[in-house]
Amino acid sequence: MHLLVINSGSSSIKFSVFAAGTSQQALFEGEVTGIGSGHASFRFSDAAKKEKPEPLTIKADDPPEAIGRVAEAISQPGVPKVDAVGYRVVHPGAKLDSNVRLNEAVMRDLDEAAVFAPLHDPSAIRIIREMMARFPEIPHFACFDTVFHQTMPEVATVYAIPETYREQGVRRYGFHGLSCESIVEQMKAADFPVPHRMVIAHLGSGCSVTALLDGRSVDTSMGLTPTGGVVMGTRPGDMDPGLVLYLLRDMKGDREESFAAVETLINRQSGVAALSCIRNDMRATREAAAGGNEKARLAIDVFTRSVRKSIGSYSWLMGGLDAVVFTGGIGEHDARSRAEIVAGLEGLGVSMDATLNEDGDRGRNNDIHLISQAQSKVKLLLIPAKEDWMIARHVQTMLGDTQR
Image 1 (cartoon, rainbow, N blue to C red):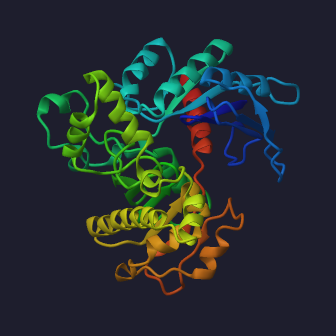
Image 2: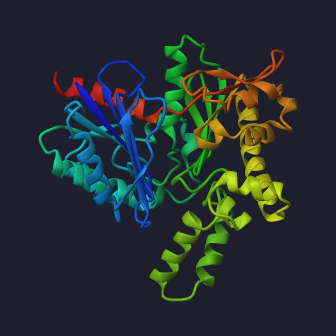
């Protein structure tokens, strides 16, 4: 049995083909980037190859057109027939509380939930519908970023707002759950003891920090939507709710136009990119800061401080720390960010090994890589996020449940 995993973002689609079983390695993998930009690119290869092929320039003006290219790739000779498809969906909304097989009723629930994750869910829904139309004979499943965080206690999820809205499902859901779950499961698979008090910092274009006790989420930085928490690439993280009201009052145009403008500002025009006045790219921001760009330096300092602050707060919440895990694009590949985040946490018993930290950027993508000093009371770990592997595992489980 072979499983196709679709992990889509607002302008990209990553996809992998797994053989059913426990292997963490995909058989094939690929990516479409730059969807809707006019210069989209496409990669696809046997995942065992060490070198990625040069990207092809393709036409992909919207998600359905992009996923059509994926469908063609996985249908070509030499690629095993796909028996099921699993999708990463960021927000399930208030009606769905577990990973689920997709049907029209579930799709209607996802349509309603799209308002909570406007950067991610609308394009994911369009992709799902296109794939269900192209492959109607096989089952399709949605795996949600929020499910892992359902172990959070009510005190961590409730908002101090009128009950009417809480009854509508307005609460803190948390995200990057598939990433966090993959960290815990990699530890178990490697017989690495799961730390009692652990923080996972998933740092990329989107960022979150999660507190775990014995591998279970007890708090996380994102809330109702993936906009809150620490400062991100184009999102501001936590801010005074009154600032949103100020922005709405300040916008020109009618109510609907003002709402759309503020939504765009918060999701696409804020964060590190807004502070640095540079595109959403940490490497470019660091290069500018190294060249004396004070705006870029401020953006980096605000970002690292927000992550450090979150880690510190969770240390207080759990009565100390046993491990901090870095993952995600920045977390896995930016040694400077890791070092700057850890700086100032010495009082918590954190001590980074600078050499091990630098080595962490040199391709150890399949290891649980220790980057703390031997005497550090808190282990610092570098572990790759394997969301696609987690989705494949969940799909296999759900396939078994549907066949009983």
